[in-house]
Image (cartoon, rainbow, N blue to C red; front, side, top):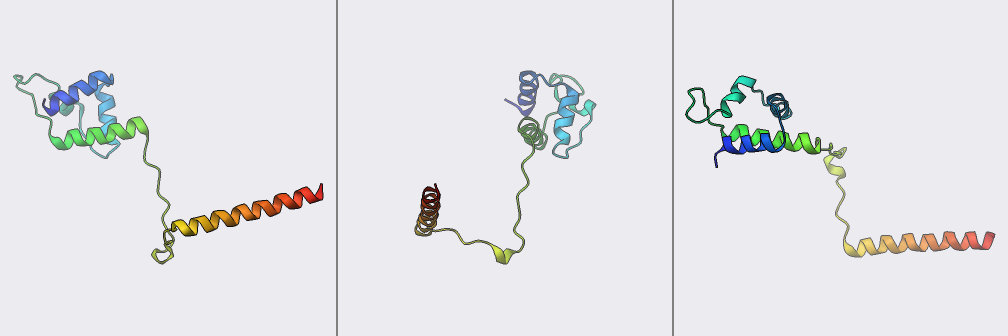
Length: 115
């Protein structure tokens, strides 16, 4: 199956028009005209037929992901590279959880004594 076949089948399956495909490609900053795009959908024996390259199909698929799922959420970057937190070990995590549960018990005892 060629890249042209994949592009054709996706276009039919997703009910996309040429305008939609151009907009999807623009989501990944890839510009293509409708006439260039139309050359991919022609029959192989047509004089204006063009083979769809890997780069165009790859950009279309990446744009399709953005089109269907939405853009990636922006990552929160650390203020400084020196401020990176060290990973929490399992034993440290247990200590943190036990401290929180002890604090919750103390608060609930105070509430009970106030009533």
